[in-house]
Image 1 (cartoon, rainbow, N blue to C red):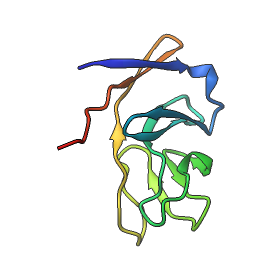
Image 2: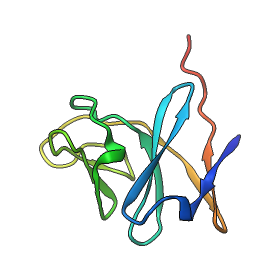
Image 3: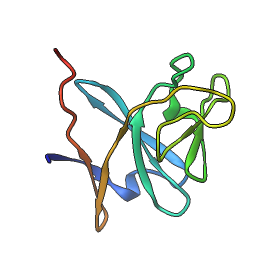
Image 4: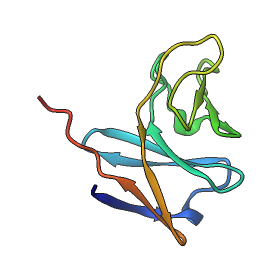
Length: 107
């Protein structure tokens, strides 16, 4: 499995996010209050809102456009909403963050 360096833990504020541009689109990398790190596609499954600009609470993020709540662990919409975004594995080594390299979705 190939991993790419995406910065350090201190680059992301607690309960915040930063984006990583990839050939497959933007990936939002989130840091929770207790320093867990998750990476998901940076678009809400509802209307494509920028999840990286949402509010992080626990291990979920609320979309800033229409308040859909997305699990950072599974990528699935929570509550009555249905839909999901891709999750990408993240590894922490000391202070450094690594994200699994994305395979091209080209056919």
